[in-house]
Image 1 (cartoon, rainbow over the protein chains, first blue to last red):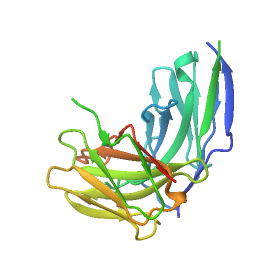
Image 2 (image 1 turned 90 degrees about the vertical axis):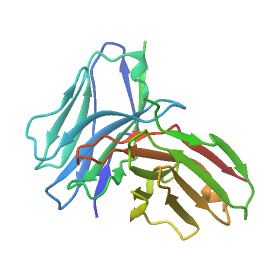
Image 3 (image 1 turned 90 degrees about the horizontal axis):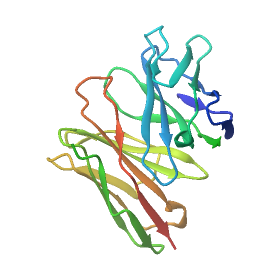
Image 4 (image 1 turned 45 degrees about the vertical axis):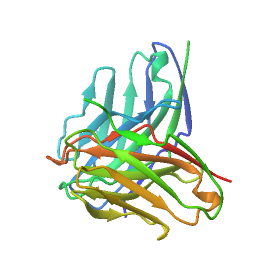
Length: 116
Length: 114
């Protein structure tokens, strides 16, 4: 069975600084996708960034980038130039590839606080 | 384009009752998934529907059931409610046209069981 582990329950960062959230996963499959979702307090979960396992290049979306280490099964999220609006719970998630299912397996989340 | 909508947003029920939650996916999306979010267990997959067929089910008791209609709207039902069923229930939809499709989440239904 696939598992996703986020070892940092809480993190804090100063506004304009950079923070890295950690995620490790376990799978025996070769075709899969990894995601970071953001859930602000009392607001909807939104996708931050996605990584296809077959792509060696790390995904980037504006201030958000990932460090995908396939052999180590590590998938960390780096947030640059942190903003107050980045404060939220961040979930790392895994999805099997192939298109047969959209089932996401989530980690336990990291609560990110941004200090002004 | 309207996002994923869930109704009702809040529900209070008592033990033993049953409840039905509704999810309307984004127009054109044929896949709907349901998740339960609790402080203790985190986000857990309930089930997934695609074109009115359940194609995946999580590890939940039979009290949890769902269905999808021809217009892709989905409902989930929980019978004989227990205190532990108190949670935020999230619905997510995707078009499923390609395997890289993004899932979009609704705001959730917060169920409180007294």
